[in-house]
Image 1 (spheres, rainbow, N blue to C red):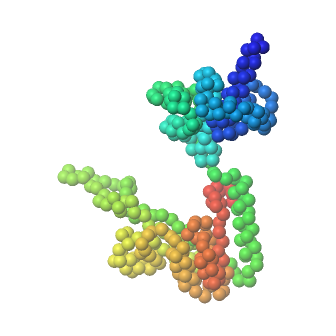
Image 2 (tube, helix red, strand yellow):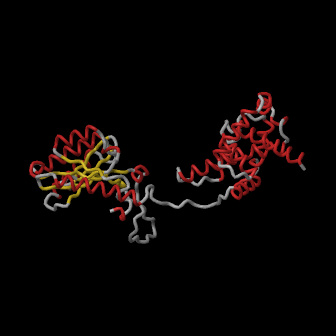
Image 3 (cartoon, rainbow, N blue to C red):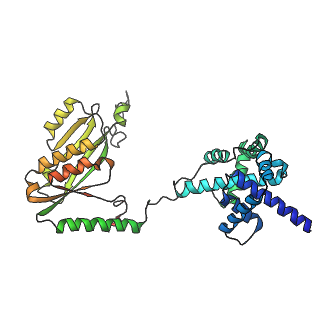
Length: 351
């Protein structure tokens, strides 16, 4: 009985050394293996210190033999137990990272691909082939992944969608934002004028709208539109304010590329709807340059109001809104830029 206990202790010691070496000398991985096979009450830190002492006290010949030919030190069964532990623990850590950090529930193909990448690189080819054997056929893959899920308390399912930040943090951001707005309004001698500006993507051609369709015996009525027109988008730069007397002065801009907005269309739009400004650019995306152009247009529309009112412009943190040149232009024009915190408007309860 004592001899069997000593033999088991020797095998466990060699397995722990093997896990430590082939996991890239990660003491926490080897410590988890040692704790799971001994049932000790030691903490993970204490177990990691024990593993490192095992490695230090091992002879150089033993370490070299373990790296070059691990089958000479261990039998095939305990050797595969140790190697599978490395692969499964790395796979479990990756799944947890994908779940909690990336918000992704890995598919079967993703699990299989990553499991194969978790196999230690310095193993002899025969051991590598033996580790990859469960991933050869579809049936063995299902059985291996089912066993992995059962062993590590995983399950097939979907991740619940939720806001990226807690509600309390949203409320703190909302409070800080309103405190800053109140500070600005309380420390200005002129009457505040708050303007909200934001962009919205509009479809250039709306397809699939429901309505009345008459039956025809000769031909079928269709919505004739090119694929490029159905895919095209334009940007609507919209302004709104609480002051109904100022609202008609605010610029409303349609931004499109040269394909969506031919020159003839730009001229006709100016005649048909003078309140809408059409910009024909290389791209329909807003940019730092176009944002500066918009600020100049806004200042021209407001005119003398910039002298009699304290104007605050509400913006979100879109990259096209944040640039030193935009800040300098707004400061020189007498505009106060007020940036709404990210995720402020995602939940009404934050307000």
